[in-house]
Image 1 (spheres, rainbow, N blue to C red):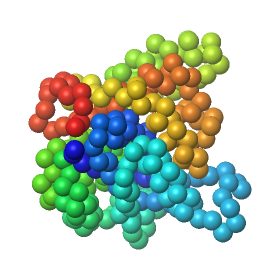
Image 2: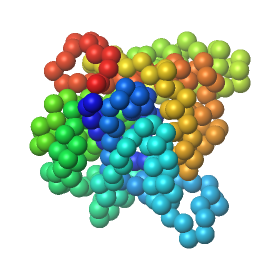
Image 3: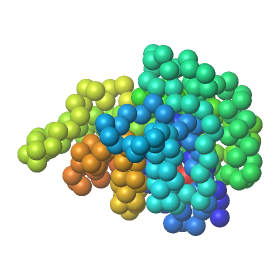
Length: 261
């Protein structure tokens, strides 16, 4: 049995980018640990969604634990930083924001967990954080440094296959229209993820998509029933989320791995 530590910026990120590999690792008999940098304080919820006196972060912490149980994580840890909001927002500079946290400090916190767990594998994000969110970029910086400090042997940077997304959106737009469902514009995908040529690992997680979607549904404060994630017909959901993509430095070129553990 090995240990997978998967590191994310906010509650709900884990199920979108790594939910399949988390559940797969669990079912293969490995230990899964989820670490989240912030409690997602800058998320948005509809008026009246929260209970009287309830803070959004409280709800998102509970949602994280519920999703983690679905995905097979045996330990959940928050590093204690504050959600920085989108790039360029004043919240980027707020005291305690993850974006402004010293990398060495944050990496030290994560490295302590990696050592405690004797982690074989760490996942973080690619150097653009998938789509440029400051906290996601910081996850890359902190994750890569923490692995160095802890001596974690394998680090996989979660990303999206940009070429596959653009191809899929273009090919299925007409079919989606027939079903009354709108797929995102392919042109909008041009700055998301990485080109396929930079990706070194592709994990088929179609067998775990029911768990992945249940985990998404557990994050009800952020993932609505009519969102792309939950309203997508099954035939599109498989194409969009049935493979999870990663970059492992020093591997490749091209996909050379189909599993993380």
